[in-house]
Image (cartoon, rainbow, N blue to C red; front, side, top):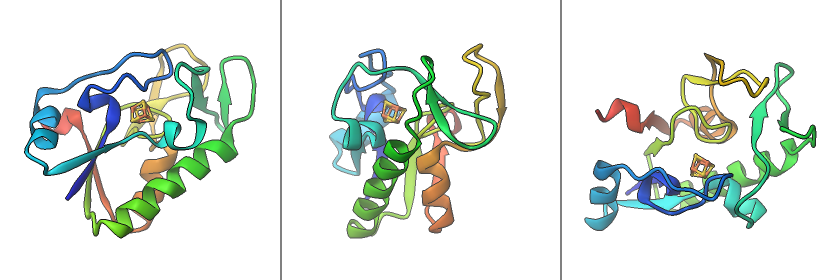
Length: 139
Ligand code: SF4
C-alpha cells in the first residue's frame, strides 16, 4: 500500500483551499493501491491556512512570520506512524511543498525561488527508510 499526498488525490487541503489532482494518483486511489494523507491537515485540521516555507535555519514559518515548525513536525510524525502501521514502503508526494516536497523546495522567502531540499515529512520518512518520489517522477 502506498501513501499519496491528499491534494494530488483531489482533496482540497492545500493552504489556499485548493487541490492539485493528478490523474495517475487518482487512479491509484480508485484501485485501492494508495491512501491519501495530508501531513499538514493531520495536525492543523484547518484549511485554508497561512502559507508557510522552510527557512534557511530549518524552521518553518508562515508568510506572516509565525513559527509553525512544531506543528509541521507533529504532522510528519503522524504520517510516519500511519506508514509503519500500513507497512508502507513507498510514498508519492506533492513536489515543492514544505511538508511533501522531495529534492527541491521553496527557499523561505516566498518569492517562488526553488532550492535543493526536502519537505519536513519527506525528510522524516526518508530517515526511516521509506522511499519518497513526487508526482513529477510519474510523468
Ligand atoms: Fe498536499 Fe502535502 Fe501540502 Fe497536504 S501538506 S496540501 S498533502 S502538499
